[in-house]
Amino acid sequence: MKIRLTWLSVAAAFLTACAGVQETRITDVADLPVKSTTAPQLDWQNSPLRANAMYVFYDANTHKQRSTMVGDYYYVSWDDAEPDKPARILLRYTQAATGAAEQRRELTFPAGRGEPTSRKTEFFFNGEERQRKGDIMSWRLELYVDGVLKDARQSYLWE
Image 1 (tube, helix red, strand yellow):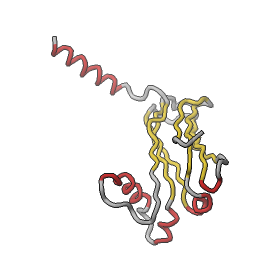
Image 2: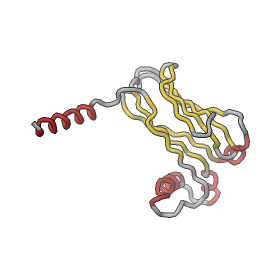
Image 3: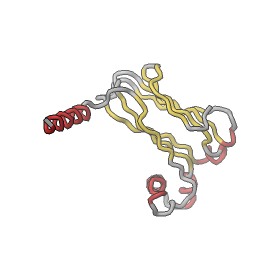
Image 4: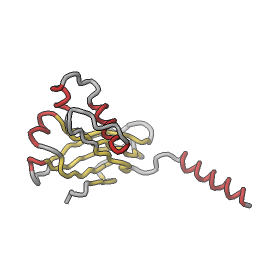
């Protein structure tokens, strides 16, 4: 009896894993800022920040090139269960120099994106605009499919 229950639970886990993407939703938002032109120390607490800095600075050969890449980087993972409909990811945010004035950036994805799958996209704020407007202070990320809000995530400072 115990062996049958074990096999039944293994089969259920396998079928669940094979089911694929079931709903359109935001699965993760990684906020990985690059605050200086040197990578953070090599230790376990800073490893995601160090990996992101190494990724961002990969082609930068001069200090000037590196300084334009300092900024805020947001990596969004989302499940796309309805690729036959148009999708849009909207990032609403505030920056240090703009105060409470809301800024917006969006990415659109046309209908016909293939099979339902997990997708990754990124938003980045660097260069002259970031130097002028400052760090991102608060943000809200919204995922729309065919004009309908499917999911949203926000920073703890967002009101």
